[in-house]
Image (tube, rainbow, N blue to C red; front, side):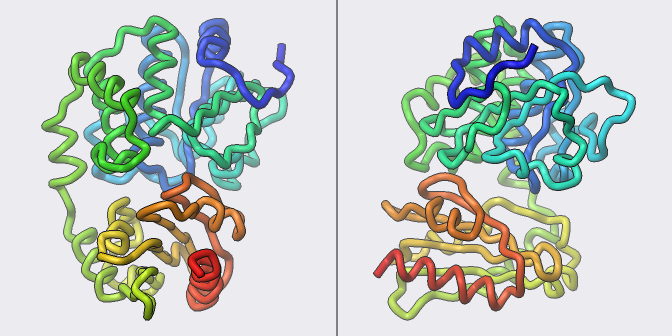
Length: 328
């Protein structure tokens, strides 16, 4: 029986519902990042450890740097027609369309949906919603959920979740890092998180395409006259020319924020002609999630994103003006 949609459920409520159910499809967001990948991986393993049937469906391929998380090899990228989906768990998705139009179109209103997330802009779209903007990462919530379900955290789960924490906290340097985050990290270390594999794969294994993409990004970095805004532009054809269309490193945008005096950094990446993925990063107290929301995006106060339909030039003109208006 479905729940009445509610804006807030507790970890214990979600845990109880998952323990009582079976046949789960875990879904993550477009261009999945470390937190999304680590969260779905660990929850899949946790559910399977409880004897449940669980599969993962993502709208885009997992970047190669995360292939050291073993279960990523079993992820699906097309609707699993042979799997009897009874429950869908959205992880790290601020809205239901973050799973992409194709995946969203397959989701039936007859299934029970769960929404586990840490984005402040989440609109509580599922039957059961556990949204905590205070959490540094969705991985932090998944760990609490596994603990609530009495799952014994093994080294593979710990490695996946630690990867999510590392990536969404900037190696525990972003202001979203809290004592709760570090306590979670401590538990994961005790459970056998493989720091060597995490370090090598996430930070010391750039392929040539990614290095070429970084070079292209730095060659296309601009700074406003007053030095308060910086942005990188990545045109589709130029990215295609260097063979880096499938490369989506999460760190490129940080070059904008690392410039002294810059308050807001942005990345404009043309992921296909006429479709621009816009990333935002703030150094201090600028709420970039509010800026992203103006063009249909969202995220966190200091890290947000949106998709702009139009030309790269139009995207830059529109978004840079939005940022300037906030800073003025």
